[in-house]
Image (cartoon, rainbow, N blue to C red; front, side):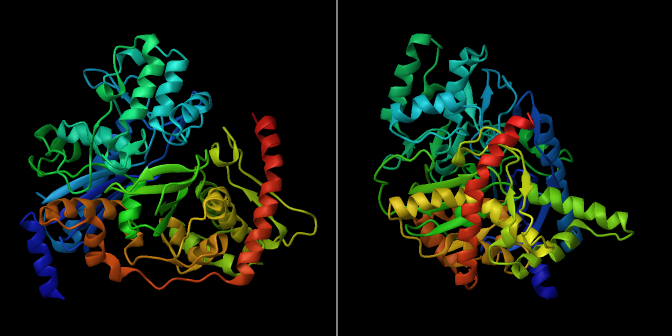
Length: 534
């Protein structure tokens, strides 16, 4: 053990480790790995979005404060584990929440506050763009935010010099390069899988649509360059190194791989980049990614078509609302514990309360939870109001309550999955899960298997999350000259870490179907709640 620790310390000291950073919805996380993808150390920083003037956003000052705090946390972990100071790394990569709107002027200044994926304020834009492009354009996509801004004649639009995402913005500040990976780019504007670049024909249609407004730019002028996985995307500048590590220990010159979104890092982390493979990322949002064997028969507004980091088409069933409402209830239970004189950490609360779901009735005892903290495009809501309801004769137990919370977080995604399996005949052999939903035993797997009626497996590194997946992409960049494809690379390095699948229990499957039907009927209550609690 000491010898292994010594060799790992020497790898880190010599600058041979690889760094991935992901800006998630509630945590910024860093993962340091060995070239063989073994996790070595990690760091994190908690943060939260704000609703300002009707827009979900993060302050860019908080982005940099958070990145500095996260990197410092990683440095501290390295110091505690290996008794050394982290300096150079062999490569690194940046990931973030996909989609959203980061509009910059010619000097690189933010023109309007960052608009996150969580906003459902672009309905008119999507209604026009989807038929124009013959492509489902979701409300959270960058092009939807751009066109909505144009329709509303927002004054910043003619001044846009660069349009990017959160990951793209951070990458630019670190390297000076406006570039991004194919997967991340596919959440801004459609990608042509044949060229691996922006879809030129659809781009021409958009440019023609807005040409009469004489904005002074075309889409290609303002969108980043698109790169496939494995290509270098710039080097850390001296200014970028100071942004991340004000201590000055992190040197300039470190190569960065193309920035990717959390969907791409999730596919990598679960080794789900081949056709007929799929993964579910379940945390603040919940989304399933199914790599397609062939194109869908028709456009479905509920389904995003994106691509893997190496360019294969993917059907994405995305739900804006995942764990936020459950997290709020867990916090409340912690307050109850303290009021009764008991101290319980959040880790203890999650660890003891969430497994109770397995003991609940298969249909959650007739309880109804709707977890819409924000709008939910999958079911037609631009705003959300979390609510809980029950009948007089419902079995109102803690076990059923927790199961209802689990189930509620999966209903919107299930709506999209039904379109894929029932209307498009998409075959899903197994789902691989990652994210906070799957922490702590097999409870998350059982709930997901019940909702999707397919086996659900978890990679051993699932707890490392997207930051680890981003580090793997950076490691792949260092090895890409060998000519190995990304699927083969992942098969060689992480396929053996995938755990045995949990198969759906027939009673749980029937129970979820009953809850799902109740949930669909309950959306009428949600609509009234949005009106009443305006």
